[in-house]
Amino acid sequence: MSQIKTKKIFIACSVVLVSGILFVVNRESVGLKLLYEEVDLEREEIVEKVIVNISGEINKAGVYSVDTKHRIIDVINIAGGITDNGTTENINLADFVYDTQHIIIRNFKSLNVEDEIFDINKDKKEENNKKVNINTNNIDELKTLNGIGDTIARNIIEYRKKNGNFKEIEELQRVPRVGVKTFKKIRDSIVVNNGG
Image 1 (cartoon, rainbow, N blue to C red):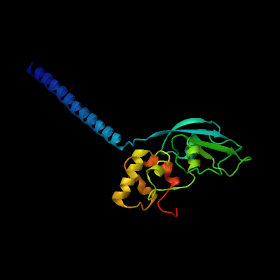
Image 2: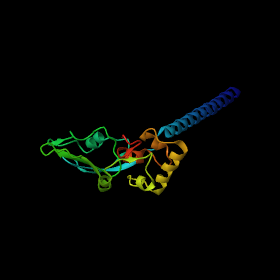
Image 3: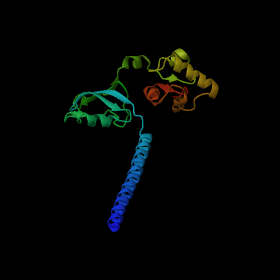
Image 4: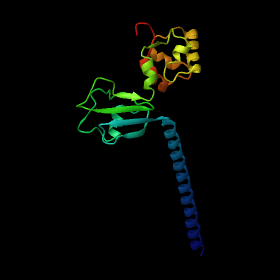
């Protein structure tokens, strides 16, 4: 009888031992899985979405919500590509998209030399056909730029006072509240000297 009891005790201990090992191994793998998930979350970028309208000679014309990292060629592909009559000859396909952008794909038969990309603030841009010098213009002149209000205009002047004149237009992104999105909106409308 004692031999049977010994076997039962041995089997019971073995079951407990194997269960314990499996519990520890499973717990460690769950911990590693959580660790990997945390690392993946840290790697994820915060991607802004913008609303872009694409029309004209495009297979699926419409309004699309896309990431700011997308380029015009990406939006054309998302919209099903251009029709047989469409042309992108006057469009810079490598440009990044921005909020409220309107991309018009023209018919190659009626292509003209005017810009093929418009945004909702076209009237404001037309009245500001001269470039704004961010090294010399005052608050009111800076505020004529798309997306620049009192606060950002003051920040630009304050930055200029503390750091001297801007050496290149990209330096404007160092000014508080001027991010990549705002800079993209105004980069073609600004200069750092009278020569452009």
